Amino acid sequence: MPPAYTRQPCYGLITRQTVTFFYSIIDENRNLGLVEDIKYYDLFHPTEVAVFLGGIQNGYQLSPLTKSDDYNIAADGITVIQRAFETGIPMEGVGLTQQLWQRPHILMMLPFAYDKTILAENLDVNVNLVPEDVLVDRVYIYPSRDVGDTAIDVVMTDDRHEAAFGYEIPLDDERLLNNSLIRYLESGVEDGKTLYISTYQNQMNMFDSDRLLPGGGQTFNLLEFLYGERQFYYGGERNVEEIQAFVDYFFINPENTWRTIEIDEVRFGDLEALISYMDSGLLSYRLIAEVNPRMTSLNARYDVVQSFLEKDTLLSQIEYRLAGYDTDEQNDEVTFFYDYTYVGVPMVFEELKTEYGMAHPMEITVVGSTVTSYRRLMWKNQEVIMQGNPFEVRYQKPIDEFHDFYGNDEPKINDLFLGYRIGHLDEGAWLQWVMDLEDGARRFYELE
Image 1: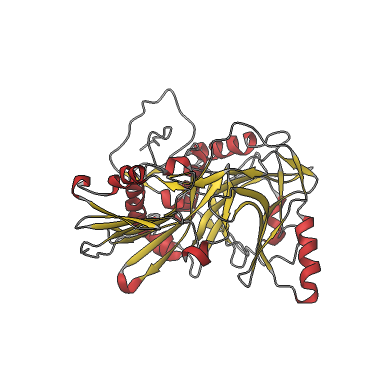
Image 2 (image 1 turned 90 degrees about the vertical axis):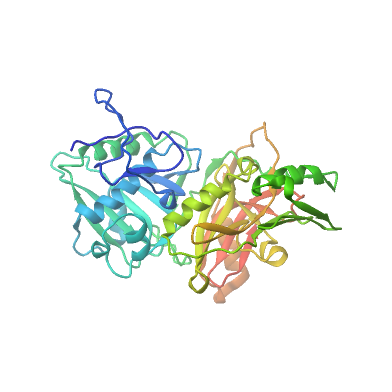
């Protein structure tokens, strides 16, 4: 059967079990039609994609991927993972280290590390084709660009490069996919765009994992301060009627709900669910009706989450992205975690653990095919018309301060990134360097 391919027509990543490819290019001479057997893979949607050309430009150009972005490169990347396991020829001796950066490539960073079980059960990959003890959160894709090349090379690894493995996908039946990847590789580079360097490639041994840092001496054009506030509060006073109108979408029969107004909390409920909204800005939804747990795949549960989030009509006012998940096998629970971002820059809430007992600003729990709990910080950034002033990026500054503070007893750095630091929810957000350490500590550093 010849391949069918088209642009992304609806919400979610589309690949096909019965058709060979999903491509980001269109053959206008072919009649396009959608088959009924469509599979969604939102669970594997990359958080970021980077292009590396090497040579004089020895760095990455990085782009965050959000739900509003075009899905073509994400869909192609997921297709590459599937094809690598299905038809790829294992590479011998993939101890890749510096070999990763000897050729131009596309780097796709996934939301979290995927093991063999997740890949096999949720990506329609034969479990016997996935190596044991794998953890994949980075995929390096090397399109075939030279005459005589016979394969698309793919390398998968975790952020520490401890268990890299690779495949050669034969080019004969994958030329359209290869052309699509080349098109992205060659068009993904923009003059003047910030270059990122790999801490692993540059042998920055104070890091315990490979991170991409904006190269020193370049400029960013970001707002250094972002105005923000809690939802439903005006001049420090909450608007109960607005809260009521918002939570009504979570109930099957809103007209049958009750509400209780407390000093620091408003509660709503019916015979199936309870919702509270705290003055601290925390929204909590809890299902109290009985649920019949049943085994479903992680991907199926994520689809349930996606549908449930449509009830939250204010999510469109903030960027969010999947950050990970946790399982409670005894209760058949899976909890998905999300982070907030602004133009791709992470929002960092200082009081998450101490004030709210959360590791991420949004979390949602699924039992079987039913959402039983939903919590999130109801924070929004005010609409911004102005642009930020360009400022120089110097990652060496926080690293120097880190060395000065810890001396010879310094822990490893897990991550270093620019983030918007938020104290109280009504105080807005300051752009700062955020450093996460291997011992769980987090430190903040001013830009200058």
